Image (cartoon, rainbow, N blue to C red; front, side, top):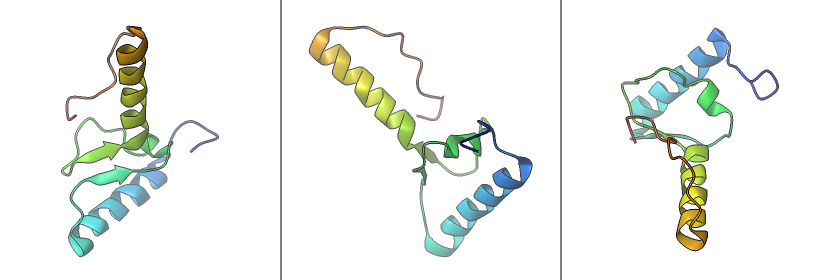
Length: 83
């Protein structure tokens, strides 16, 4: 995924099944997309479980730091409707 910049249907299915297993077997609540390219596999607009995209969280914090410390304003459209 990292090289091609997109996920195949098999890759999406693999990660979605893993998320469901984590929730059902281990009681996970949000599914954390801890790898920088995992968002490629979770590209549907809505899932039946909450997702946390760590790369998106970092981007938001970088934006906030810049704005609060240097007054730079960057158009903010980082979060989806779920965040």
